[in-house]
Image (cartoon, rainbow, N blue to C red; front, side, top):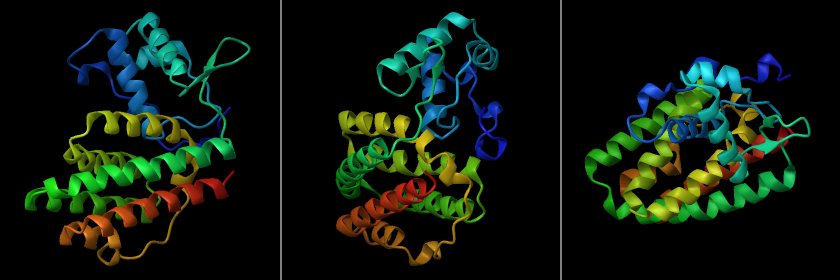
Length: 228
């Protein structure tokens, strides 16, 4: 059983299928559970039970089972000896491998995105960054992971590299549960106005923004590693 203090997102945050307009029930269940994994809704070692998930998503068990098996094939989940499906336990080597890949790929994405950002785009991304800092300072895990996801992928869409973005998403699916515990730990942060990330965005400085974003990823994983 996952200790209550380790739960970051309440179960009601698992999106209902009503928010997905296209695709089969299985693919829509997959999208919802996948997003929940990306946002740290499930903790390492937590079992994903078919019936509660199906009830929350408003579907039968079959689409949920198919969605979970697809996530197993992508190494986001694993099948235990009792045939149940669970989130993988934290593993130092796995954590560091995902960290290194995220640093590299997200650095490429943000560097490619910078030339395509307009003034309004920079303002929106900057606002998301401010919301992220505020949430993290107050140890608001729900808002932190939601806004963190919005910030990164809103920025990466401007890279116009769908294969790269898809690869980053797959890493987030695996990393979400691994940074689960990190979200509940209060973090003292500098003012967002003083960060290289915000300065780089406002100056349209691709290198400054890239380095600052990569450093923020490393910091996040270092905090997660310290909690292993």
